Length: 440
Image (cartoon, rainbow, N blue to C red; front, side, top):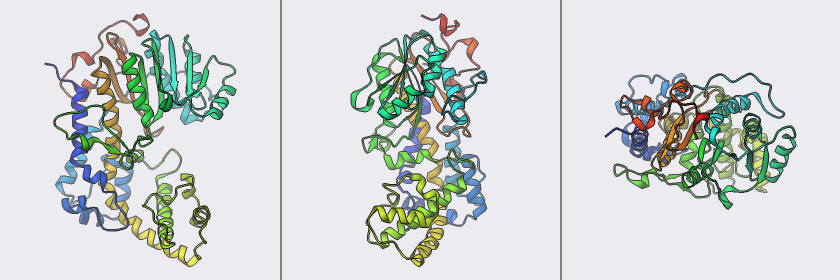
């Protein structure tokens, strides 16, 4: 019997998360080191790391060299994360250069071009393309220009949908206001449903709707923690993994938003670190003022970018929102010093947990892929664009059998997950040598 690379990769990721679930649940706080690190004997090693080592590990993630004498089990974790996160790249051919559309930033243009290149091939036999969470409609318009079938954008926010229509006067793209999570997603087998950075639960809803209808699907997920329920249960299972260990709460799923590079999408890593330190100082001030809250809740009610400014401004806004008297300048200075020391400690203790952030992203990708594959879909997954463009870059492309996603002549664009290991999987390889437009 031929091995199934998607199922095997899913199991590898699931086991890795299950074995280290206590680390995922044990977010470092301003108190004692998490029990998971103490019991493994890692806490003392982590707290002894110098600033240069911490910076290097944070910036390079699994590719970083851990200083000696790193505990062997910790190095084994790093090696396992490297294997699980070794997702191939979807090698799309370079798109034709084009100017950015109105209100479209260069980084967004790069993402749209790469994703549209995938969707155009996938939608070759579709009679309609549905863009879920279409926002301002940049992707919707690009697909409408490239395809000869109706392209419909679904957007929950009426004001954003109106903006998308205003930007779409020169294209055939259409937009409808609907809340997919509340109203459902009705598809047919001739539809192609797409979502670029479909947040959290929305991605799962798209996958389940495609599975029910037989619609083709292309999906780049995002913000796994954004969902109505308090946790995400796995779509698939295995007798080798206890299901509760894969029921991931939102506080754990949010870890997938961490990135391991110096230049972030909105701010540099150094700027993000300073923002976290300011938030920690704010937390201390609120607790001292008698507010009962968990670490991380100190910024509730404010835009998350509020911590990117000066600490005095952040404190003023947070205290005003809670109708609390502003603390003294001395109290703010004391909180800043306390936060600097605690933040340095927390950064070190967070290193093993942060390693697992990308694993969460990969696991959810494979969970969705395996769910579709078990329902007769041909599935391809991989990294669609570089981390420098967006850390949310894992793409799932699927079509119900008997159609193949790619032909032999198109292998430079796509790949089979059989490339992840040496065991070939016949049903993951192209099943038809004709281009997609010749398939019916």
